[in-house]
Image 1 (cartoon, rainbow, N blue to C red):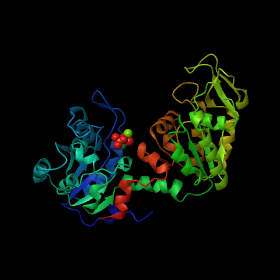
Image 2: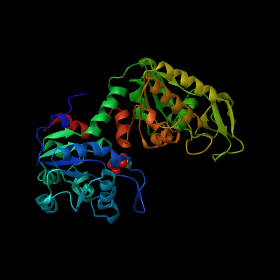
Image 3: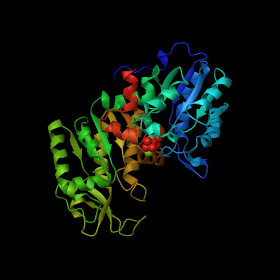
Image 4: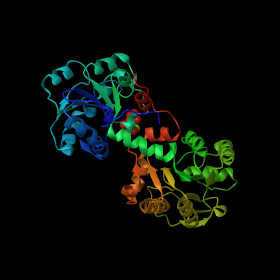
Length: 401
Ligand code: 3PG
Ligand code: MG
């Protein structure tokens, strides 16, 4: 990767004002945070800067307020839980720019940490308005971006600011980029990718990119049905995008040219209705799906074949479940293959990287999240990275001013 300035490249920061872009966009229901992983992820950078005597000003979006103030999207709601998690006092400043911040800076001391109000309360944030970036930059001596999960957005606080101040990647950003580089940038081969999810249409770019990058492409979820249909399999009432069969054929051809093996199941778990533990559930060969049945998971023979593939691989990148994961018993194959990947990782034979909301939930359910090499906190940014796109927030750091 083009050289990425990190916190190691900072000189003496004592008394300097650090504008640190983090992602405090946590799920919140009735004032309670559902999952605070993203908050914890910021702590190494924030602690390091505070301990070196910087005055740490945290910038983040929270929800999608579209340029107007929304009390339910105020980062004041996150400030107390953040301080609690951090184990230190954290101030709240009711704007991300202007006089409120200047006033706060008059009393903040080296080592203090403050959360600034939701950047998206200003329309200029999403518009990447240079005026907003400039107003934010006025309150900082340097900029740190530690929000990989927002790096696919070219917004004032994720992109614009990086051009106005000396800019550095935070520790979480650095870790994430290193893990992703090891998984797809410059991986040890063979490389396998698991791509699941309901629709081929939402992951077309990812599939096109991956066939050129990986040795084994394992297709799961509803997407696999479209691939099976393209191979002439009768998929019954399965979710499938029959209008995309031509596109899928092009993906097969691209894979063949690139020497990438596409893996589709030879046996599947089917049912007549999509419901928890339906009485009609059965396992059959893909060529035996009845007209009134739908495919909801891959079968045990397919699972065993995929486990054998992973045993020959050195690197795995995973996005999306293999089956209709939220509904029992159709989570079985995803959980079993996740456990195989986790065990191979623990044995030291596999580097495993996974990302995307559903995927992380699935790995947590399988109880193997901690056994993967790296789990991304990012949703959209992880997908765009898997599509081979340049993330503006990352590019701005490597390009500098
Ligand atoms: C996320 O939740 O994926 C990030 O915080 C980015 O949020 P956004 O999709 O609203 O830009
Ligand atoms: Mg989102």
